[in-house]
Image 1 (tube, rainbow, N blue to C red):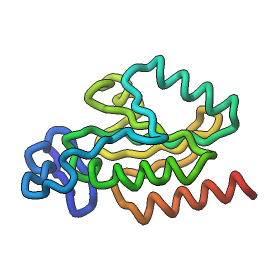
Image 2: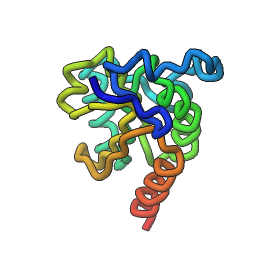
Image 3: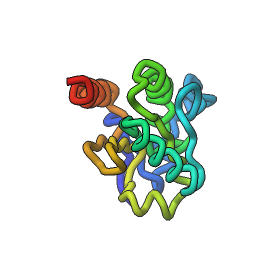
Length: 147
């Protein structure tokens, strides 16, 4: 069994008991997909959003996440805010528990894991719920789109 690095904002599924901060009720009822964030629970809905992103020349920001992971819940409000502020992105949340085989194909070993896709191809990746690093990557990719 691996370690859960809650301080590093990272959870591994086998470490659920260590990741879930029962003393912190702040994030227990957070919706992982709200506003402009689309919840992906089937491969068909994934393919549909990827096709839409290619057609509309948008970047896909895919958040591989799960509702039992404290760092996932903590970053969810920021992720929703990002989705609202960046119309050049299609923000998706893939529930790794709903799509375990699909998540395995994407080599998800910890949650949250963020993939940035352009034309259906990976252009960047971030493992963990580091808010500052996620914002830096969004800014860098946004500047590439606008520049």
